[in-house]
Each structure stands twice: as C-alpha cells, then as structure tokens.
Image (tube, rainbow, N blue to C red):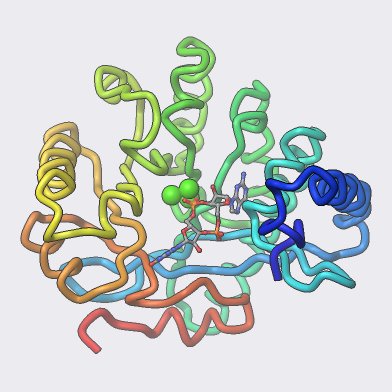
Length: 279
Ligand code: C2E
Ligand code: CA
Ligand code: CA
Ligand code: CA
C-alpha cells in the first residue's frame, strides 16, 4: 500500500488537502516509529559476476506501520530527512544491519558484507567516522565488512568536509561506494581525489540494456573509467539475463537486482546468501 494514499487524486485541490493532512499524520506517526520498533530492514543480495556467488547485502529500510502496512522508503525517507529524524534512524539502521549480519555469519561461519545507505545529514555531521567506529566496536563487526553508500551530491556539497570524512572512514577500514552513479551532478574529476571503493551504476542506465545505445555507451564508459581509477563497479536494478550478459562482457564486477532477488526480510538472509547467478 502506498503511504500517501490518494496519489492518483493529486491534481484535484480538495484531495490535495487531504493528501497534505495525510502527510502530516504520517509525519507525527514517524516520531514514534523508532521507539515503537516499527522499522524493519530488508536485504538485497549483491553477487560477484565471476564466481556467481553472493558477496554482500544492501540494507533497505521499511516502515511497518500499524494501520497502513509496510511503507516503502520513498514514502517516508524524505519526511525523515525534513524532520532530522534520519540521523537517529540512520544510526539504528547501521547497528541493526551489523547485528543481522553477525547473526547470519554465526550460522554459516562465512563473512557477510553489508551496505548501508547514508543520508546527506549523516554524512555531513562531522562525527560520522567516530559514530561508525563506536557501532563497530560495540557489536564486534569487522570494518572491512561494512560498506557505506553515499551519493555524488553529498560528496560535492562540501569538498573539504567530504575529504576529511572519507579519510577518517578509510583509516577506520570501512568501504565507501558512490550510489546512483551518473544521476547526480557529474563529479568525475573528484573521483580520483577521494578514497572510494566502488561505483553503483544507477538502475536507469541498466533497465534498457543492451538495446539502448546511449545507455550502453554510458555504462561501458563508466566501467572503463571506474576500473582505471581502481574502483569496483556494481550494476543496480539488473532484472534480465540479457542485461547480466551484457554487463559481464563489459567486466562489471557485481550485480544487484530482481534477477537475483528482491529485497527480503532478515529472516530470509540464509536463503539469499546461498543464491548463485548461475542457477
Ligand atoms: P537505492 O539506495 O538506490 O536502493 C535501490 C532501490 O532499487 C531499492 O528501492 C530496491 O528495492 C530497488 N531495486 C533493486 N533492484 C531492483 C530491480 O531489479 N528493479 C527495480 N525496479 N528496483 C530495484 P527501495 O528499497 O524502495 O529504496 C529506495 C531508496 O530509499 C534507496 O535507493 C535509498 O536511496 C533510500 N533508502 C533505503 N533505505 C535507506 C536507509 O536506511 N537510509 C537512507 N538514508 N536511505 C535509504
Ligand atoms: Ca543504495
Ligand atoms: Ca542506488
Ligand atoms: Ca536511488
């Protein structure tokens, strides 16, 4: 169920008021969601192109609303950001994701890498690396098994602060990837300045592969550039075998998308860890 309810009516003035009231109600519920334990994390596997094996999981936040059901991030993360609640909730996601990975590892005895999305507020907070270090130490999670996803926009908002934060994260030993690569402000020149580990090619460039020639060219050039700069490449939103084959030919390192699995609750981690691209 869509959180805002009457989306289809948004062009009509009376319904728009209704929609605004609805958003206000949602926002007031949001203030209680954390202490009421209504947030849940879904996980989506990322597989290595060469081995076909799952190498990591992206943590994706959901809100289990008592009346409205499961709400998707696009319908409440903007509200979390506006209200500033995202800082607290983001820290909860980081902790919970590490805890879930630890529990999964205890079963398989194999390390599991977790990717956590950061919001701009968390990234520019100044004490991010210290907070991350504290969580890792508290839980006993290995820094090199944590990846933080940031966007191009966050990087270039404040180049000096970004450089400092990324260097602190590098000293800590966590990985940093650029999410939705290609959709933001193009910051190619800055890529070499920062200690980064991976680029995630946005789904919009992947969905029409290989038929769309400009998307093909963009993806090919991005992979080439990333590799020259020593970065790994993850393709997002891979849904079809043809997309997978095309990306494999180009040397893309990892894939994530419905082709392998949709995001699923933590209880299903064991099944997702065992997935293989070849099956
Ligand atoms: P994102 O980081 O770009 O995450 C990828 C989105 O693409 C997810 O949407 C995922 O479910 C969807 N997706 C993955 N594979 C496919 C596919 O093959 N086809 C299609 N059509 N979609 C696919 P989701 O879970 O709705 O998350 C939306 C956005 O919300 C995320 O985009 C991210 O920007 C944000 N988000 C999610 N969790 C968090 C969080 O804990 N913190 C912050 N700050 N943002 C989050
Ligand atoms: Ca992401
Ligand atoms: Ca993305
Ligand atoms: Ca996105």
